Length: 324
Image (cartoon, rainbow, N blue to C red; front, side, top):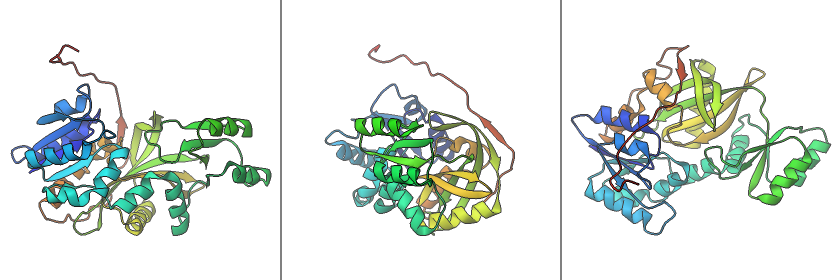
């Protein structure tokens, strides 16, 4: 069995986990548009590919799937999730199963305002969001909203171009620079993250791992502690089922006044997934079992509470072929 990990970038751990699970029975092939992406060197083989925005990118990935006899393919970056989901049949035609939710679900997750609307429709608590700054201002003047607020791209990722606004003038300035923003209520509470796996065969929620976030950096969890809450497990299981999500899902939440608020939903491996893996939540093994045609048995909350993750910097040194 062979796995293709697209846009591997700096996600060395995810590549290592799949390689360990496939030892002796398959290979991991990784791609990136740069030969300075360290994660590609953790794979059994790597391929340098064009940027995902360049013409012919999809055709090149499908060609790799055929050449390398790929059984399952996944991406580690948000912009590529839509491409995988929208072209599911093309990948299946070359024998590669995209490890991703359906296209409509992926698009809802990627569009933060659409996700806000979906959360409201389903009855889940979340921070108020506005696409029209004038409607936001009316809410502020009526005393129903207050500063600070966050300004973020509707379809952004990796916490890029997010800013905090402390007054109306700052909102105006940001909007003049980029109108493709939304205003999000500042959620003043403890932040948590959840790694959820929904079985690709049965559609059941198989695994839920929750971590209390202690420190964040550039949108990723730097320090966290494993956490359990049966009520939260039930809420998350119900939510991902109602959404129709499949595979690995990364969910950001806040606890405010003893109530849970869902903030963001990413249908991919989150940057904090290594914490779950180190606690025994082996999603790569679950994915491989699904690709072999076997459903996984539910093991929700099957990990120890109070286990801390602390990220630290590491480097990779390699001699480059062209001495670049």
